[in-house]
Image 1 (cartoon, one colour):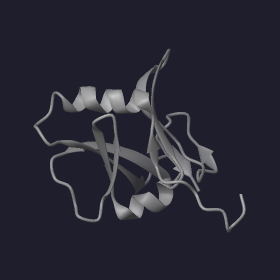
Image 2 (tube, helix red, strand yellow):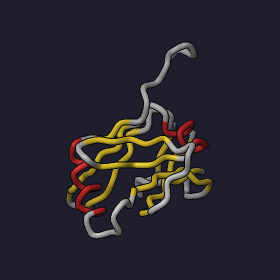
Image 3 (cartoon, one colour):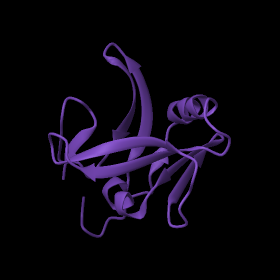
Length: 114
């Protein structure tokens, strides 16, 4: 990808939106799924998923099919162009982030390098 290419904003798949709605239906009204990127993990950075009731004014809000996901401004830079999906396979169920910025990832699926 060239330096002048502009990555699309973070997107969420229909499967992930359905799962977010399912999870949040058991939480306090007005809850959100917050996705963040933190330093750590076996590859240098790791994804964090939390249920929160407060939204910060500078959060990126991604909405699809009634599901709302929040991403803080620092994490947006690491996630730009990513798609959030939900997978159910032999090793389990989880949110999966297809991140075009990641140069390497760990087998756990939550740790990546830039």
